[in-house]
Length: 353
Ligand SMILES: *Cc1c(COP(=O)(O)O)cnc(C)c1O
Image (cartoon, rainbow, N blue to C red; front, side, top):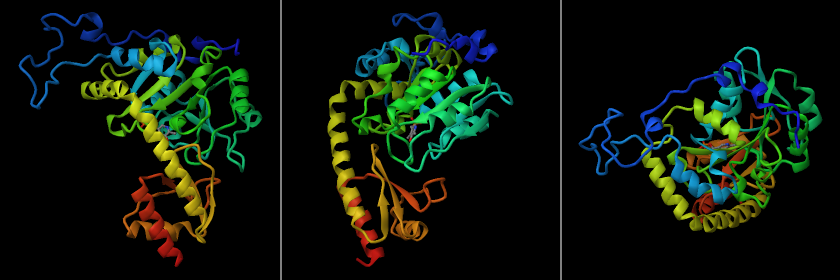
């Protein structure tokens, strides 16, 4: 429980008082009628299917289907143009440029810092331990009256591990700003989601995405889960029609088809375990880190040479060897059985094995 948290102190004052843009679809929400209010083309579209009408600005149908899947109320869901939009809006809602700050825990996902930089917001860094866990005391020691957000990524990108629950809970209990837990990879771990704790923590925000387990990266849709009050603020400051109509249609299709997702996850997990053990057996591999995600962080004897060799073979992985605590490491997304076999084949050739 966090009893000190006061959303109105965390929000920027002008955001608290803002009058949002009122769209045509805000002012009349009925579905039947002669619609002459939004300057749309009444005749049709230059496509095979009609997309001439503006989409639902609040994506109500999607939230109705998504809420029971996630165990939250529809009013606790924000949908954004990628998680990146949620990240940006959380910063803009809370951090005054040039005076407020936020804390990130490297090595971690790059967008928290990029988004802070775009918004001219100070970034404080508290690195993970050698075993990629967070240090709650050190993090809390970096906070001051201007600290608005602590970003935790669990399972963490690029390290792949889940962050200790008691450590996250300590941040939630003792920090009176927002604790954002980015769960982009939650579907690949047996760890419970922090969405279960939204009832206890008004300062908790959970971010998830349709880009990974759901296989919908191209739709650009991220999810934010938080208190009804905070979600209302995000809805107030987002671009009015931030999720396009085609994306909304396909998200509805995905939610109706959601039973296909567990089998894809199971296949990816099986491939992850197989790939991890094959990589471990290679003499050019020093270490395969345990993963709760759909990728592996792998330390090679010579990461640069390995990266170059793979690129020549048209196998593209992510070079993380310059990242703090990830020296010598490549991040490898788990592919299909055939893709993983191509990767292993190339690595065996490189190793002369
Ligand atoms: C992939 C990823 C996301 C997803 O971003 P989208 O904008 O929703 O595609 C978010 N956070 C982390 C840590 C990721 O690795």
